[in-house]
Amino acid sequence: MGAKALAKYIFAAKEKGEKLEDFWLSNCKAGTKLEDLDTAIAEFRATQGMNQRSKSDPNYHLVVSFAEGDLLP
Image 1: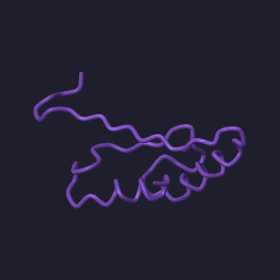
Image 2 (image 1 turned 135 degrees about the horizontal axis):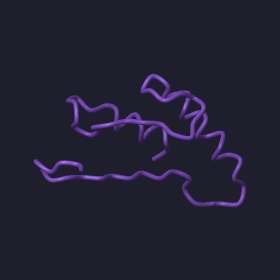
Image 3 (image 1 turned 60 degrees about the vertical axis):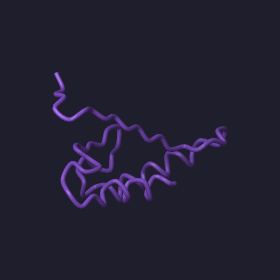
Image 4 (image 1 turned 90 degrees about the vertical axis):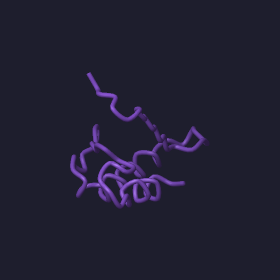
C-alpha cells in the first residue's frame, strides 16, 4: 500500500479516534495540518524518488495502541 492510499485509509475513519487520535507532520515543508496532507504526500514521494539505492518499500507505518483507560504521561 502506498503512502497516499495508507493516509486516505487512516483518515477515512467514521468516528473521532477510531483509527487516528492525533496527527502531525514533521520535517516537511508542505505544512503541518491535515489540510496539507495531499501536498505533504507529494513531497514524500519526491523525497523518496531521490533515493536510487534502496529497492525496499519506502513507507513506514507505525501503530501504537493503548488499553482503554491508559493515559499518556
